Image 1 (cartoon, helix red, strand yellow):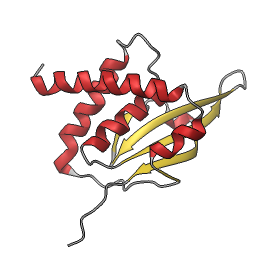
Image 2 (cartoon, rainbow, N blue to C red):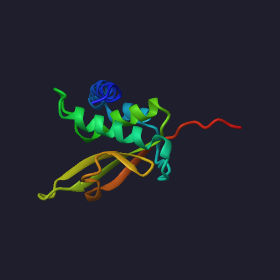
Image 3 (cartoon, rainbow, N blue to C red):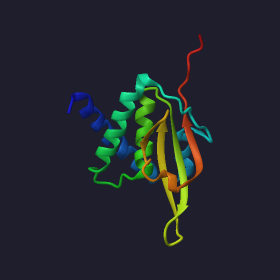
Length: 142
């Protein structure tokens, strides 16, 4: 494992912890930090960032298994969004709901950047999107 992946794992650990703290706050206070409501960033691929996006996804997935706090879908999605934001990479966080086998309402969160899913993709198709938060990066006017 290279030094860049080791650094991403340390960063992922930090952001997973930070996101876990955010999850414990009222969602109305956290929502404004997640980006623009009801905004979906483009699905187009930015080849310049493809390898970095994949590495961030891997770091989030790997480190979430080793935190001593719960690092499930929403925590992973927020952590990934913040890691991408630090690098000026756009992303969309999705919140969805569904009913489980017993008819109980369940929720899920996942994160996408361009055509790549950073977290939560494995079960996202079971859920109906109820909210999106898009993080667009400011473009310089020429």
